[in-house]
Image (cartoon, rainbow, N blue to C red; front, side, top):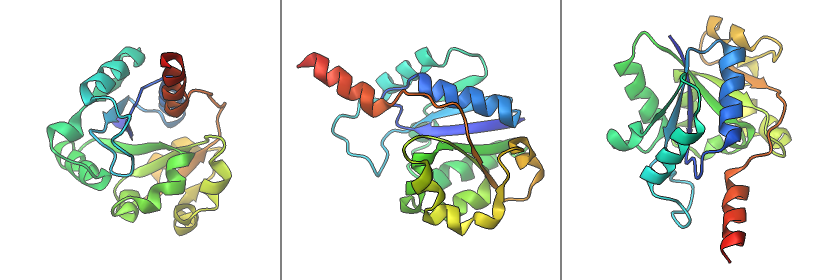
Length: 191
């Protein structure tokens, strides 16, 4: 089974998450995409963060296709670092093939994550175009560190045939939804 993992705060989940998931499912030949709703991203402030149950409930409303599974796995297992989550998933699902899905904004800041290089060693990685972060992401530390392991964008499905670390940058039709913009709009309507 090929499973895409999309981690994040999902504060709130929106059509952009669904857009990336559908594109990943189609281009990478995924059987499922798991949305890993994080209890609290250590790099984000707690102020303005909705309760985990509310974010998970919203994510389930947005995930309108049967091949997306919304989970609070990190809360359930008391995990707060991506590499730990990947280690547990690899142990619990040894026959599954996982790929970490992320937007270009996360590729730009992944060197701030604990043991970020290990993440690339543990799973394949697919990075999705996300304006305006794309240029910064592709010229950043992680992109340079794993430059020789990057696949041509024209063949993202070949990711499964490559030895880890391997990653692909996927250009796609951009989706305008953003959790930050949605929260800001909600705040402006409330005042």
